[in-house]
Amino acid sequence: MSTPENDYDVIVIGGGGAGLAAAASAAERGRSVILFESEGELGGSTQLSAGMFTAAATSVQKALGVDDTVDRYFQHYMDLNQWLLKPGLVRRFCELAGPTLEWLLDLGVEVPAQVSSDAHTPGLTRAGVEDVWRAHVPKDQGYGLVQVLDRARKAAGVEAVLHTRVERLLVEDGRVRGVVADGVELRSGAVVVASGGLAQDPALVERWFPDALRAGDSLFVVAAPGSRGDHLVLGEQVGASVAGDGWGLMLPTAQFVRHHHWQAGFPPVSRVHVNPQGRRFMDEDASYAVSGGLIDAQGGPAWMVFDDAARRALPEGYADWTPSRVTEHVGTGAVVAAEDLSGLAERIGVPADHLLATVERWNDQLPYGSDVDFQRDQTLAAKGVTTPPAPIATPPFHATRVLPTELVCTHAGLEIDANAAVLDQRARPIPGLYAAGEAGGGVLGNRYVGGGNAVANALTLGRLAGQNAAATA
Ligand SMILES: Cc1cc2nc3c(=O)[nH]c(=O)nc-3n(C[C@H](O)[C@H](O)[C@H](O)COP(=O)(O)OP(=O)(O)OC[C@H]3O[C@@H](n4cnc5c(N)ncnc54)[C@H](O)[C@@H]3O)c2cc1C
Image (tube, rainbow, N blue to C red; front, side, top):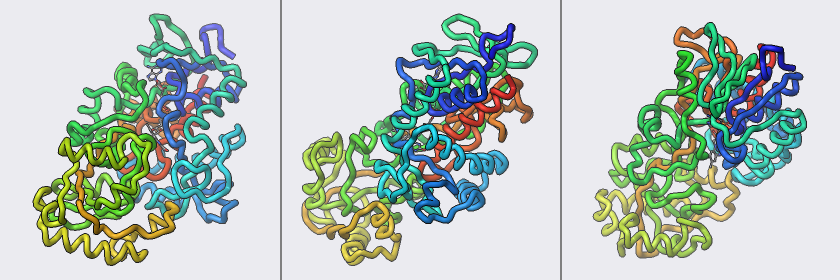
């Protein structure tokens, strides 16, 4: 119920995962809520995502006999992020991610209690570096999550206003009192900023995530069009602190790829990644949590090497990884080809004897089902690959640069405390202002905790922000 001086109890800015979770949970507490979405449809990046959601001690894990606790999740999360995040906020997130997943299941999200070998088959999966399986893949992925949350929003009577980009906050005596959208002032008891990240604004990427620019001309952005960094403009108005400066998620791809892997297709399983010394340096299927950092740490170009049998075995129907597209890129120079490995080494500028030794060692191991160097056999097994990869042996041999090129999400958000309240420069909550998702800073760190760190952050903190905004209002 709004009060006489307020139009609504709670105003939510942004209709992606965080905003919908905030709106639904504030309305669950009997508050009047309105949500503004700048684009023509709800969903944002959440809708484009696999919807993978990382959480501990859930009913899905229990049904599969996976023994997990909030403490283990917290330890893993902080260790992977080298304890650069605030433990209080992260512990709260780890405590609430499981209950948020249960809330979603109650609302109608389907995560069957079955093992999934990828990010697209509903069930419980593993992204590669977590200590136990805790990546939950919902039916219909991010789209499915948005559909269920939107049904909850409608059922709770929350109006969603599309095509309306909130331009500023209403502030009185240091307290946030509402918003201005399309030149119209609307008053409320509390405001939740859930406007997503900044990946679609090149100037903001340069300022807040300059590492992304190391991809040069190969950089491409898959985040939703509304990811324009409006949270920073709104936060600046009230002197909000920003957390997550310099961090975001870049996925490594081949230099010529320009699409998310669902459209791009997948590189050959029989491939080896080598550094400027021609040495193998990683599990080629390593999780996002570590793969970008590993490639960056090589001090020069990293290359993906595969043979012609692997190229010919690529399935048709994808945008980038097909036999003919690879050959086309031999023409553009983005793929280098040579009749033998020595010639290939010369063309990519790595020592030929090293490359020959690397491929020989790989051929002696992976085709026989083991990888004593990087344990890739275990990653392949978790992905459901049942036959060992073929040797890299059929000319012509191919190489293409592999580097972090795909900008997925950004982590520079308005700093929040463990109540999802936005903090000022002196770490004091700004009255009436909450933030969540990519717009809220502090949970997403320098390492993506896979799989499903960002969706879990959006929905868990979105729900918390909605609950606390409702309580404040
Ligand atoms: C292709 C892809 C796959 C991904 N897969 C996964 C995955 O499987 N697991 C995972 O954890 N993460 C994944 N991510 C990242 C994850 O989806 C996002 O970080 C998360 O969903 C962001 O949620 P959000 O609510 O903060 O932002 P969004 O979902 O982007 O929602 C923000 C909304 O706010 C709107 N908006 C912006 N400014 C304004 C304004 N001024 N006024 C009104 N509305 C505004 C936007 O249009 C948008 O709809 C993926 C991302 C992409 C792009």
